[in-house]
Image (tube, rainbow, N blue to C red; front, side):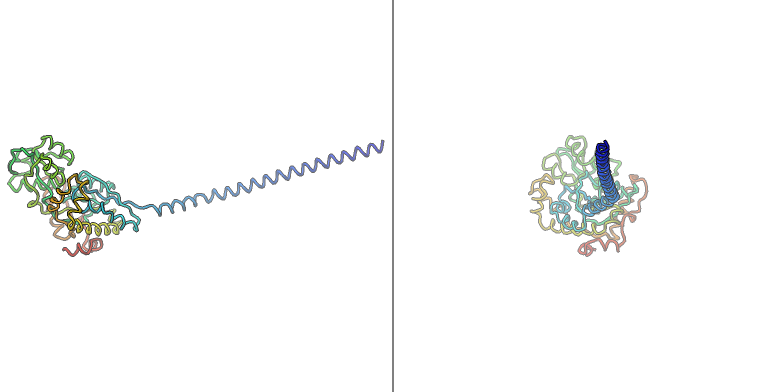
Length: 368
């Protein structure tokens, strides 16, 4: 019996030892798993803590490689601005500055300056009157450069079989034009030239496309419009030219921007004016090539465009005191006619001579 008892107690001791070893082994395994989990949590926490910085760094890198956009009005006329878009030289010059070009199309000058004021456009190209109306509305625009008049490129049209033979015959008639445009301004001057006033005709304010439709349907008696609308209607035997702006126009076009864009990016403006002046010179000297390039843009055949080429006078002009005085006369004219709500001081939109010297091409400054 004692021997059996000893043997039983020995086996019991073995089972106890085995259970202890298994427990110890299980505990170690649990402890190892727990430590491993803690390590993963710690690592995840560290990664989570640095994640926003990594994202910010990644975002900053992405932004540094993104190009800014300069939005320039698209010209559908026979112009150096249209050539500048076709040639692509501006895009190449602006690339090192971190800018790409977006060409935006508008019906006419007033619509451009509305977009300029609403931060939907950066560089506009208009006649003399839209900036005045824009300034009257409180817009902080900046005049950048001007051009020669090219008055023959704006025409007063009448239907091809119209009995109207002179501007005097327009009295009491419906005349279409874009409000605040060069057509509006030249109509005033044409009427004054024959001792008539704007109130002597029925003014029909229509954007070019709408005026084109109204004119072709004989809903208006005359239409003051620029190229290529005039030539297209004459070619299609819908219209004839009653008079053009050759003798009447005493102002050029203006390139303008917002005060905000000028202050932020004078380097971009300088490059734009330099490339534009190169395009002006090239356009003047290459009528055949210009005609081929712009035939799709103007919807006119190259031979017609070559003839039209002579209606334009090419090259930028610098802003001078004479330019400012003339523009003030335009503003005073619109105010005297009651078409702007307040008297405008156009100087508010012009820079100082020193500021112009920094952005205007040297060859343009030489034209003073």
